[in-house]
Image (cartoon, rainbow, N blue to C red):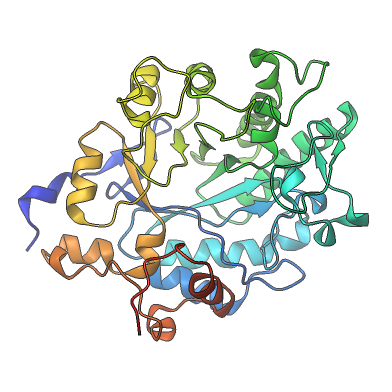
Length: 377
């Protein structure tokens, strides 16, 4: 029997467009590295989604590239052409069969794309500034025509998501990918309408939102969720500051989106700089700025039911679990059944088959130090 302490996690939630979720827990987008080389989804990925989609109210998929020159990972599933619609449909179906809403996260890797994965090995960004990481290739600055092509590609991928049966799309403007590259003063040194001051650096992501909303209006036959994910700060100098993000979020809150989704490794983290009070959490600043105009999804190190309760009490609409739902696919069911003390918070090296994790993702988990809490053998 559910502990009354956690009942708010299981209250329903209705998006601005009228779509209702059965509870407040969603799956965060997590890359699997496990698709076929041609970008189609594998059976192992479908099993992974099926194993995790039952208790949560919504699943945000791993990111999928909107154009061939935007692929950012080996083993990534693609959405850059109509031939991918059957593959995309398989993912949507397996999620919805478990009773969750299916949201396709769409993105372009920009300067983070490995050269070997994109046509002619040419990577693109807002400006010809390499990322601050070892071996980073200097990208080619996109022309205005090429920018318009990518904006249209986001629209076309949204159409494919609608045709494939998704309940919505999440625009991936976080984690250093192309939309963030245009917003960042580190990667965007342009002097045209897509760069320069803070307002101009918003032009590209805002144009993508407008394009996607127009596609939804033209093609969706029922309410279709459109969300936007962002990272609040960058370590680079110059880079995105918390102040920059609050200005951007103020604008995003007026765009008629169904939600905003902040990308954090720790839900209760505090800003690096750019605001007066560095003791207030980023979530507090965001909620103040949003002022109930659009729902906010929070994420980051929400391991236990108590973590989730405290996070939801801040005023965020929804909580996203990523690594936690990989470590324990039954996280939500355990809390619902009053078994929250049984939640597993560390991964066992011999539990791949039990957890239904594709081998390429499992190898990443085991080999990237500190990425997951792993039990000693």
